Structure formats: C-alpha cells, structure tokens
Image (cartoon, rainbow over all chains, first blue to last red; front, side, top):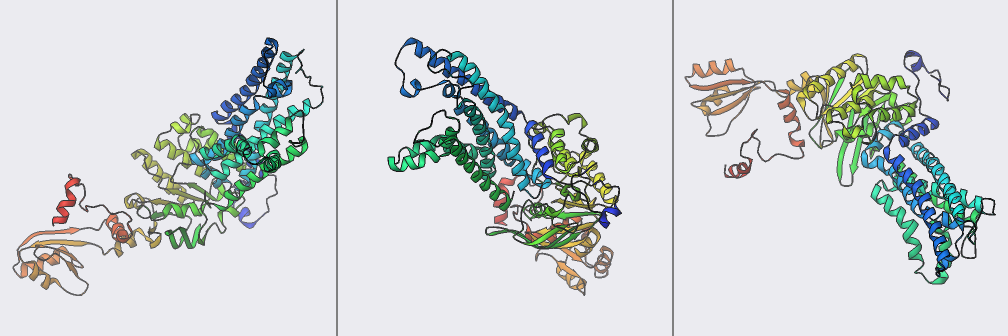
Length: 282
Length: 320
C-alpha cells in the first residue's frame, strides 16, 4: 500500500508494524465522492433526464420555428428573432432544473438519509467533503450537459438549415455559446450542491434553487425600470444566460462578465454551505 | 482509549450532557448505561466530532477525533440512527467509506464476511431488515481496523442469534486489546459483556464502576418478612447497619442488613408467627433502576409490571 503523504516513523507506528498506515487525503475524498455519485440510481436517471431535456426540447423548438416559418403566420418577436443557437438551447431551461435538483440531492440527500454521519465520521475535517462534492458533481454535470447542447445544436441546425435562423458551428460565437451553456449547466449543479449543504433539506434546496433561477427575475422586473436595469443583468439566471447568448446589448453582460458574475454566485453559495458545514452539528 | 473532561452539551435551555468526566480503557468492554434521554448518544456523537461540545473536551487515543490522520483507524463507531443512504448497496457504501482512507478492497470484503453480509452485499441497503442494517453499521465501524470500537445500542432490533453474535464480537474485540465502548439502556444486556460500567442520568455521571461493585453498593440482599406483629418485630430487629421499611398497618416488612435465617430465629424466640420470609437478591437491573430512579426522564404512570388493564390503573392509583 502506498500513501501520497510520507508517514512519519513515530514510535507508536513502530510498535504496531502490523497495522496498515491509512490516511485521509483530498484525492481519496474525491474518489469516495465519485464512487458515491455513481452508485446511486438517481444520478443516472437525473443525468439521463437532463440530457433528454436538452436534446428533445432543442429539437421541438427548432421544428416549431420551422413549421411556423413555413406556415407564414406571424410569430412573437422573441421567437421571430430566434436563431439556431437560441432554439437548440431552449432545453437548458429544463435541463438546469434536472441538474440543479441532482446537485441538491447529492448534498442534502446525505442529511435526509443519515449518510452524512458516516461521511463526516470518515472525514471529520468536513470541508474536503464539500469541495470534493462540488468538484465531482461539477464534472459529472459538465460532461452530459456539454454533450447534450452539442447534440441539440447539431441536429437543430440541420433542421433549420436554409432558414433565416440557420447557423453553423463555425459561425462566430456559436462554439463559445455551446461550451458556455455546458459550463452554465454544470455551475447550476454546483450551486445545487452548495444549497443542499447550506439548507440540509432536499425540499428547501430545490425551492431556493428554482426561486433564484426562475422566480427572482420575474419579481425584479416589477421594480421601477431604473432599478431593474441595474439589478437585472447581475441576477444568476441573466448573468448565466449572457454566457451562452449569441447577441449582447446594453441590458446584458458580456459573456466573460456574465461567467464571472455567475461564478461569483456559485462561490457565494459554496461559502454559505461551507460555513454551515463547519459551524453546525451534523 | 476515550477520555472525556467536563464534557458538556447544551441545546438551548436543555442540557443533554452535563460535565461528564470518564475514561474508557483498552482491553475491556465498558458499558455505557443510562435511561433514554440520559445523553448517551449525544456523548458518542461528540466523541466522533459530529456534535461539538458546548464546553469541555473529549479525546480519543490522545487527540481530538478530527485531528487524527486516519480517523476510521482510531475509532469505529456505530451510531444509534441509521447512517446509510438507502439507495446504495452495502458494498458500495463500504467502498465509498474505504476510499476516503485508502482502505483496500480486500478489507471491505473482509468486514462483509465478518458481519455475514455476503449474500446481501449487492442489494440496496434500504431493503435491509433492522438486524442486517445493524450488521452493516458494524461492518462500517470495523472497516478501518480501529483501536477503539464504539457502538450505540448495538443489540437494538436484533434477534437472539444476532444478540449472541454481538456479545461474542465485543468480548473478542476487547480480548484483542481494543477499547470497546457500548451503550445500552438495558442493564441485563451490558452486564453479560461489560467489565466496567459508566452510568449516566440526565447527562450527569452517576457511577463509574464495575458490575460487582454496583451490586455491592446497591445494598446487597434484602429480606421480605410478613408476620403477625410487624411493629414488635421491627423493634426487635432494629440495630446498627439494619434498615427496615414497611407501611403502617401492613404486615410486611423489608429488611436489609440481616439474613433471613437471623430474622426467623428472632421471630421464633419471641413467638411471632411468620407468614412469609423470603430473600430477594438484588438484581443488576434493580441496582441500575435504583441508581437512575431520579434521572429517568419519563416515568410510567404505573410501577406495577405488566398491568393487564392500563386504562384503569391511573384511577385505582389515585383512589389508593
């Protein structure tokens, strides 16, 4: 057995040569969280659901656009301005729910089942558990999310080819938008993990996640316009959308700024989760 | 080795653990006894750092639990509440815990074999019976080959075979030189395996003793005597070291400090007719109940065992 950190030859270790030298390391906690994530059926189901939402809703949006265009009926302005990227990313609204909920489940599910007692007994320093969960789940969500948006775009752009919404991968901003959407979805998952750790409740975590991504933008739009235009671009959902939007105007952040703001929201949620994890009894 | 110093835990107004001082030593089984709500589980949670003490400290093998490089190798704990995800198989549960310490797969299989879980290791732990769940908890506790094994109510919900298995396991672990710390609210369970006893009630230490010492302290044996003239017999028996109790008007007396033989002789010498003369050996259970009487959180309304008509017991009691 090899350990990463050298074990000092303490006298007590010399007295008991038969005992193997186990040791908790950050890499091992990561490995533990990785195996935990994949040994639950809910992970496979929810990731599959997220992937399905991305591809299915992207296709539905593309077909819908094409049939309306062919029928010649007038379209709502939002829809009329659509392009292959926005249409094929239509599923992100739904996929973010699936991936965010799975993030909450991965963290808060430990509290609702009692697993957290085993987890923290093995890693009593606690914080490595949160970092490992966030990193593992970020990667676990990033891969299917990125695959999903690419598949949705490739099929969607095929459907839309020849229409005014047509775009190719090589068009400016498309690759950035697709990778950005994958990254956004992965970070939503990480926020889910952080909220789960912060609230220790599956229902509470999901509620706050849905509220902050879907309800808050609506509520902020009720504010006076001058306030609204200052606050709105920095909301998690709007900052996140800026990461994968093709066109940006004065009311939205640039992709880089949007990603930075969204990463800050993620960091804030993680910080909250970390404080609760360390300060409060499990 | 577990050392608690003035260990205290408060939840708002309620003090769950109140200034506990004790040491659990290696090489023997130490029973941790107390009625429900005495603070046993809270104490054990503090040992493994799940709860932080309000004041005081508890150290395992010389350090705070979280300061050890390989905590699972220092203390293996089975906590009262289930600590598993029901959707994960026993094998995956143990493997995930083993990964954190670099514990090899062979050890995971070893503890599965040790706890007799081979046939169900790949099934979802949520479908386990209470007994299987306890075995999985014990497998997790033994995973790191720990120097100290701490089990909270391990026989809860086990069938007789499982209880026997736990007893043998505990004495075996102690014989290997490990520290074994087992909680229970049943004296009869602990008395069979424990050499040393730590008794708590309402979060306070009531006794830090051995099984033999506890019986001796409880006042040894007691004699029940029913006779024709209890008032006169009481006067005849009174002396130093003798304690007599009995209700006025009743013909029964409880005597401690004298043997049944001596009481019978005195009664015969004075021509008092005896109706009953019986030695009641103090059971461990009784000694424990005496010790924790004031510390029991919830008293039953009737003290008589197995009252067939509990609905009327309170009315008959108030009429008495």
